[in-house]
Image (tube, rainbow, N blue to C red):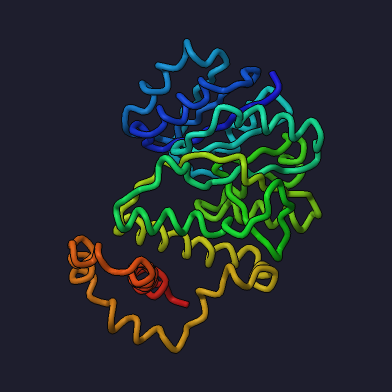
Length: 304
């Protein structure tokens, strides 16, 4: 085997089948798949077991819920190959995904390759909020040059939705920090950059992100994400100066109180967002409303 695909999941019964189905269709088949069930209370294990006969090297690991860092590290610890490919349970990779990672590392064994989380164009959502989330995911790559590019502190992009790294380098850098339940990917990438390790992103290595969180779920996630960034600074206060843009949300602005006055009534705005009146608003205005509303009910709820 040439690669180990590590796929952590928590209560992913309704989505992990799509991720595994995509792995069954890979042009390159010389890999093992390690699914780590991280304390799932749904029937994820039954869904995964259906692929035992279709993925010849499928390993299923069950453990108490510990979070993504612990689950990914567990998968890496039992991997039988020298190349680790981390994929999230809501990611549908393209048929050439594993082959692209393997070929890249044959030429660049000491580098890291990040696949693009850009949504497939045949999956563009029409719902107003999902369209907004789609545009947010798409925005950071819209000015990217054609072809693979190197990631630095100045053009930072990183995600563990679809990323590969050698087992040797992953171990040397200290793996995922198991004290973190979120922002663990950000932390890993900063440690790699500080160690002068080459990280590349390939905009052509696309995948479809099957995540349709509504606005309430998004606010909850954003709150957890910002709290984790705040927690991360307790361990690495130097990150704030290294990546000021990533922590700009911690600075209060003159517009905060105005936004709170306008968007503070959560029930009112959640009711309005679902109306036909909102759907015919200009796209730019919709974006501004979504961004400000989420900001008020996530960032502004956190002590900064």
